[in-house]
Length: 361
Image 1: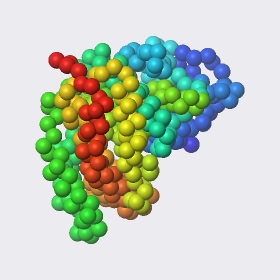
Image 2: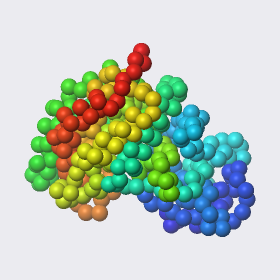
Image 3: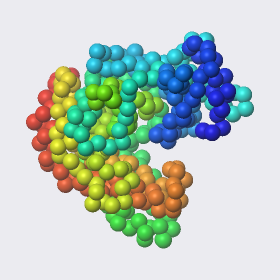
Image 4: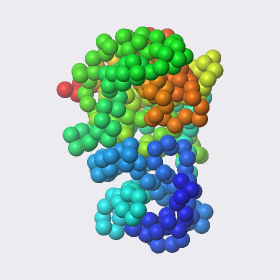
């Protein structure tokens, strides 16, 4: 991101409907996909400027339509709204073609907010559950047919299985030998997940990437404010959002933790998170409640098998700092997947006790 000078970014900002002045910029490096900058005036943060990675999200117009429509529904006294700043032409994003093609957007910044990668705080877990359920409740009013799939088949297990098997067939004997235990685990869990019937679940407008650091909290009160990084906002099943949250909230270790003894399935944090989900009005169908626990197995496994596939393919998708990093990522995610399986009955019982299903037709 160093190629963007303050002068360059100020020139970009001049295309948007904000006060013209000389702004300063602070790169935000938590995200791995887009180039993101905090926009400051007199050291006060006012906006977030992002370059959308159109290599990952090739339908920028559709993506921005998803975000724009969602923002119109995400309005509630218990949900902090974020505003898209329009260009002078009334558009929700800016397309530039001088030299390198790029797409830019500007959003309002929520002052006094913060995010966490992991937590051991039950209140944070509760608030995460509460804001995720509020997010999904508010988006029930959205028309799912108006939303494009920004990453087609993003959480499609059959696609990830086929990609894994193709990579396994083409990989070197050395890689297969090194990854033997991960490969065996992948085959075992693929068989266990094959019986899950998703077609009976209602299709919702979901976030699809509800890891803990995609939730903003108040620094002062620890209240959850809203969800961010809506580029994966598209049609899906609620168990996707449930599972991604569980894998980053119930596990108090970093996602790439090499010492698997540190990878946890914290039942107290699970209970708090599900209490948060139930703090708003009920919104899940009977079938959703019955299958919800599988989300906590499916989502870490999907991320793990994608990392394993990339390792077998020679590390062509994820950035790696060393040769076996994708294998280490996969092993860590698989370790949590196993812990979710070990605690499956507890999780299922807790969900059935705390979440009241509704008849949604």
